[in-house]
Image (cartoon, rainbow, N blue to C red):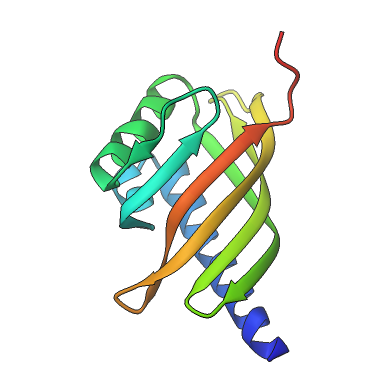
Length: 130
């Protein structure tokens, strides 16, 4: 059974690498393709964002507001049948490389057409609000 969770962890890390490279190249369409059709983003300080079209717009807005690079680091992945729960950390950077935000996230991954996709994505900052 342990080999299964290692396999899914590697697969989730690979999908996160695709997320990062797509985002860092400004390709929000490819970022949104990593979410299920009915996915839900739960960003801090904002209303929920539902569905791929709205997710494309959310990430496009983030880029337009100055987020030019993102890093994701998986801390753990727990697989429950056709669902996986990922915990990790993120960093958002500006064009000049300065850190804009950093914190932690939790993503719920589901199988959609035999591919792992994010169903729910929530994150919050480690920075103190002033």
